[in-house]
Image (cartoon, rainbow, N blue to C red; front, side):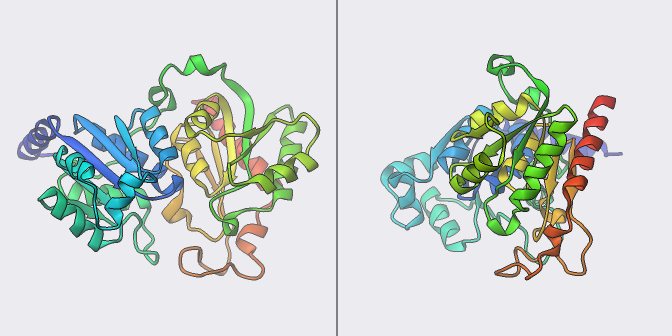
Length: 340
């Protein structure tokens, strides 16, 4: 039970920050940023306005999900100058317009550059915990924010897709039998075999479920293989826009994928999500959400994705997962959904 003094301090902290503007700077990939969306929810509770400098595709998603108010694309020449040490005067004006700045970066040099431009100390945190530490990325981020007084505590928020996507009914009807399958990820090392996904597709289709496939912008070869090996007319979504992907996910009854940014998004949006892990660690990267099943067989070796340059020759961590196991996990979590 919290003390009256502690409650008073939290209230004072909330009042202080509700008049403040926050700028977040994060150069990470989709999964790196989506995995800390719950932390943005906590920050959103405290700050009047939150903006972000990040990749354009992710920035569009954060605004669409109402996690930030505005984004600046890190790919533009204007903002790339910030990372080269010769910041454009317009960037200086932007940085000075914010009350607090959070930098997700390993670079102390970049921290010093931004602090010098802003004329004050900023909060910098490593975007990921040390690779040899078994702590979840979200716990790592929340703990750092709490320790620096940016949020009152490190508790995780509740997540519900229907409160995060505005006017969801405008984007089409929800289809509980539609299961989206994404065979890709940001690294081929983390990908379960495409033949396994195709077999899962066939198995769940045979029991009256409607599977559809997803291929990302850089997954042309995967999309081509799916077209060649699946029945004509199979739904294969080639989505270039993350907000469009979020709309599709939120209208679906489930998701199956590898350890990827899209899996993190599906879990965050609250749909039943089955994630196939291999060389990466579920203890560090399990997607955060209310309905998530992780598959990673027990092996005699530890996750090595972040500590080794290549996978083991036999890749048991991926090969021991079977299509039957994936289907069983999907049905298990779908049953749980029906019981809620």
